[in-house]
Length: 136
DNA sequence: GCTGCCGGGCG
DNA sequence: CGCCCGGCAGC
Ligand SMILES: [Zn+2]
Image (tube, chains in turn green, yellow, purple):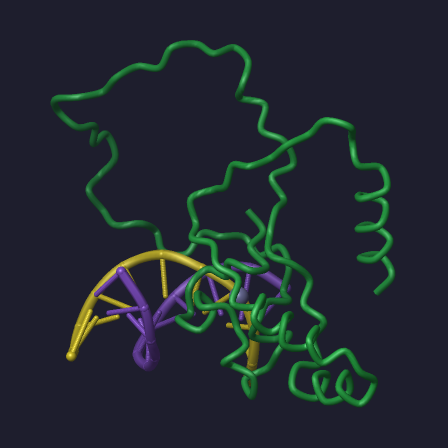
């Protein structure tokens, strides 16, 4: 509840002087919410807010961005190049199935609800790894 | 039981 | 390529 606001405010308030992060991870990135945000933003009204809330009772947290800090920048040792034969030490068995530990049990599905499936993130719609609440 | 996700299938 | 479900694992 306030933790988010507080955390965000604190983050912005204590924003370091020089810090730019412009790299992204591998998962796709899209924010269909922008449309929603814009739509609800355009409304700008009390009754409008209520209506918007009715349509989407979720305030929406934000896109994503967690990577604490990758410290694999220094010690830039050269990398090895692998080519030719491939490595297959382990058996050719398929993956042991799911392996992702659950961190936050609050994704588009539970947050929005089955009745608002259209509002879920694309990945969630396809029953894939959520990209909006992603928690890499 | 539900959610969340991978693997797999279809246009 | 986008779209979706079966089925499993974790809670
Ligand atoms: Zn999602």
